[in-house]
Structure formats: C-alpha cells, structure tokens
Amino acid sequence: MNAELIAVGTEMLLGEIVNTNAAYLARELSRIGVESYFQQVVGDNPQRLDAAISTAEGRSEMIIVMGGLGPTPDDLSKQTLAAHLHRSLVTDADHLAKLVDLAKRRQHPITPNNRVQAQLPDGATPLFNHNGLAVGAYLQEGAHQYVLLPGPPREFRMMVDKELIPLLAGNQQEILASRTLRYFGLGESALVTAIKDIIAEQTNPTVAPYIKDYEVTLRLTVRGTDETVMTAQLDELTAKIQTRIGDYYYGTGEDTTLAEVAVAQLRAQKATVTAAESLTAGALQASLGSVPGASNVFAGGFVTYSAAMKEKMLGITPDIIATHGVVSAETARAMANGARQQLNSDYALGLTGVAGPDELEGQPAGTVWIGISGPAGTHAQEFHLAGLRNEVRARAVKSALMMLLQALKKNKSI
Image (tube, one colour):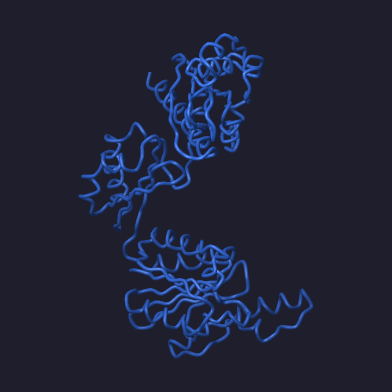
C-alpha cells in the first residue's frame, strides 16, 4: 500500500508555517507498512485541490488530505472531496453532540459554519477528533482509499495516533519494523564507504543513512508478517554493520542522545562525572542536566573561561598555562584532573579551545582540546571542528560525551 499526502493551506505556500504534519504522518505510516512516494502542498482553493486529488489518484492508492476541515470560508477540503467523489455531506451525530455541548457551555448559538465541522462525505467512516471539533473521515471507493484529517497539529497528531493508524494497521497484511543506529565521530561519506557493499546489496531489510545534528544515523527497515523473524533479520544486519563501524556507535533509537546514553552508562556502572568548561561555557553540563536522573551521577562542575578562574577554581598551576597556553593538551588535562580532584568524581572532562570567530594564541577557530580523567588515567585529544562559533561549541560538547562513553566502555570491558 502506498499513500500520497496532500497538505492544504495557503500559509504553507507563503512560508508562514512549516508543514510538520506531513513528516509526522509519513513516519507513522511507514511503521505499519504504508509507504509515501509523493507529497503535495496546495492552497485554499477547491479547483486546485480537486486537481491535486486527481493527480494523486493516477499514481497512489491512498490519498490523504490534511487541513481545511475548519469553520472558515476557506476550509473546503471535505466539500471538495465529496464533490470529487459525487457524494453528499452528512452529519456525524457524535461530533454534532460535541458541538451542541460546547455551545451550551459557552452560551453561544451554533452557527451553520460550525455545523459543517460535524459533516463528512456520505459513506465515510468518521475519525473522532479528540482535541477539536472537526470530524475526520476515511472511505474507500474502487481502487482508492481517501482520508480527511484536520490541520492543527494538536488535533492532527491525536487523530493519527488514536484513529487513523489503528484503522489502517488492521487492514495491512505486512508490517514494517525499523531500527535507528546512531554514530558520532565519522562523516556520512566515511560511513557509506565502510558499508557500501551492504547498501548496494540491500533488499529486505533496507539501510538508509541520514545526517542530523553533527551525527550520522542508519535507519534499518524490514518488511514482513512475523515480528520474531523480522527482529532476527534486524539483529543480523546490525551485527554485520557493527563489525565495520561499531567504534563510532553510541546508541539505538529515533530520538536517543549522547547525553542520555552517557547518563545511563554512568548509572549502570554507579560512576560519577564532572566537567570543567572553557569554550563551551557550561553547555556540556547543561546537556547532562537535561537528562532525567542525571543528579545521581552528576553533582556539578565548573565554568572557567579565564586563565585566572582555571587557576583559582581548578588549582591549575600558572606555569602550565604560561608555558603551554590555554589551548593545549596540558591545560585540557589539568582542567580534567583539577575538576575530578575538587569533586572527587570517577570521571571528569576538561574542554578548552577556540570557538571563534577570531584566533586565540595563534590557533585557528575550531581548534579544541578535550581532556578526560578517569580510572584508567588522564589523556587529551585534539579536534579541529568546522562551523560557526556555536556550531563548534555544540560539536565540542558531543565530542566530549563520546570520549566519556568510550572511556566507560573500556572500563566496563576491563
């Protein structure tokens, strides 16, 4: 089964709002084996919407119209679809009752345009609106299926989750299962090169690389009818990929973050961490603190922008900075050591460098040194990070978290 998504709204064509509904729905449809090959955006115009529906019918089995179900004059999606299919509009009793109840509570009369929100094409199955008033609809005619969904995301997502997906899932013989593998420390080109034969030979499961927030992810997708068999297929493919690029892997999941994985690993090993930050100004500690349960492994840390604060707060001897400079392996190691000693933590990170835009100590913007101190000792690693000032800082934070995860992994294997 394949679906075509048609988003209705002139404001999207004008760039006033972003069509987030299409991305959400496409992802949810893929989870139940419904693929989306085409998407359209059309303004609040019945003639153009009718043409868009006709175009979709020529290449897709399911046509999903998103938006245009409200009470205003430019909300014409259900009227256009009904006319396209030569059907009349009928009133859904449950949604009319909801409108009547709301009118009584607000002590306002129901206007004709309000009543339209309770209407749907004759013969359609109503999709209940849990967060709004406009009824959605599902109907089948000939070789095509048609869906009407509201536009406001709060209404849209609830209707997709509670009404549409359960209905469609019951009609699908095959299902899709996906797994997202997350990597940090290598670019998309290097990742694709390492597994190019796997990508070239893919059939079922499939492999798709994506870049997001300075990371690379692989989305593995398998189609089938037996969940146990499908899980085994994903496990086999995952293991094959990990033999090539496992050193850069940090976690699995669509929304998993480096900070979440770091906190989970620290909790599993009953270990603690602290940090001393210069160029990142507390961003690393903020990322740790954003994770629920971080207080069990992270008691606090230091932001030491100036050399004086590095000496005062971390106990770094002045000759280290005077001899080697702020942007150096020696200073990064001393920052990590000083933070660890001050808070008696198991691990500590020290971040120093040049975020930009100007050079510092003759070092170009993007030069970063990160020190890590832990049970296995203290060392520092140099990075040359691309991007503008805040991009360098964000990448430095993720680089530090990856170093922490690698140290935790090594400690676990000892």
